[in-house]
Length: 266
Image (cartoon, rainbow, N blue to C red; front, side, top):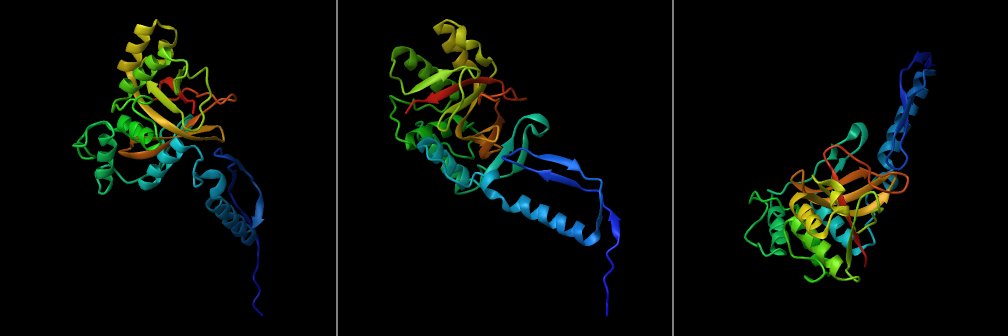
């Protein structure tokens, strides 16, 4: 009879637990039989690969604006970028790029919503603002509700003016420290930061218009992160994960000086 001998082995391994997007690891420093070590390693690997429900964005958002952005993110291959801490700017999944068909023509559709149908993914034109405008058009917002602009600063400054002119404006602008983003909102960065908030209206308009750099559409807030989708990120439509504090407010991250959050009221 052939007997298998299971001698204890010195095994250096780390046990990792990843609840809702945050991982914690610790060394065990234990001596385990070789067979048990193999079983443990396989179990951890299966747990990390199979738990799609808590760690991925496979479930479509219920908000219409968020869902429209989510569908485009899926169309482009679901590129994902994680911000904050040691992972700041880490891309854990790459998507298809703007220059490949039929996606280059899809970028042309984004530009079409802004009156620039002659441009597409090969035109070397920054199209992140056109993406946001296209999503709003597809979600049913009229030109009087959301400007048909391809530049972030232009539509944000217009939204600021409309908010001041009407108490019933469908979009409200907030300083990032004053408001917690929800699905369908926009999170926007810009070099001036939130200094516009306490400036006179003319100065605030100018700072928003001249310094806004990028906006992403929030699809979910979960596990200490805002999940937000934007165009022309990594030359694709990508989801970025931004850390939030205990109140759900955006935290500072390298490379993304927060300018404002646009609240979608309806």
